[in-house]
Amino acid sequence: MAKEKLQDFIPGPLSCLLLFDKATEKWIGTCLDLGLTTSGNTDKAAWENLGKVIKVHVELCWRRNRGALVKHRAPKEDWDLFSALSAKKEPFRSDKITFDLVEPENQLEPLWMKGLEILQGTNCEQEATSVSAVN
Figure 1 (cartoon, rainbow, N blue to C red):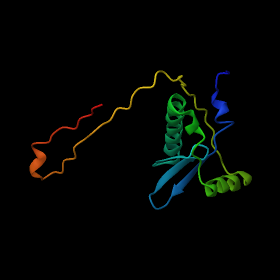
Figure 2: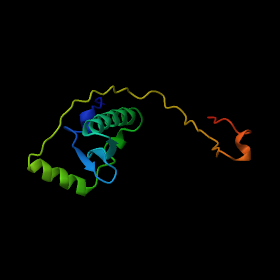
Figure 3: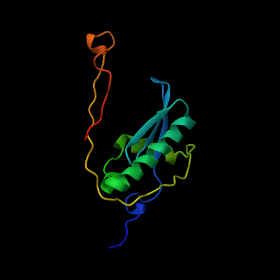
């Protein structure tokens, strides 16, 4: 069996949008191919955050569930907007993302976590002071 390549799952450059949201006064970055969205206070921050989110997502999916790389995509409206802006030759950005793809090792059993939520001003505040993780 041939070794899988990233291009088998994501052929070509990723299509992304950067939009300013007036309601939150944040820049929203979306990767249409992977259905990922993040934000930033500036267009540069949103773009950099999107690159980081893409990198982490692809590396994790590669290790755990490669099918998830093609499972989620942005809605049709976002793709239509991307197509319209591309046709108008709107300004675009381009950055290279280098991935550290690690082949899956023996799958680990899931690790469960549990926590206690403490509301300030309650009688339990002194008694419950820790949050723990168990498997």
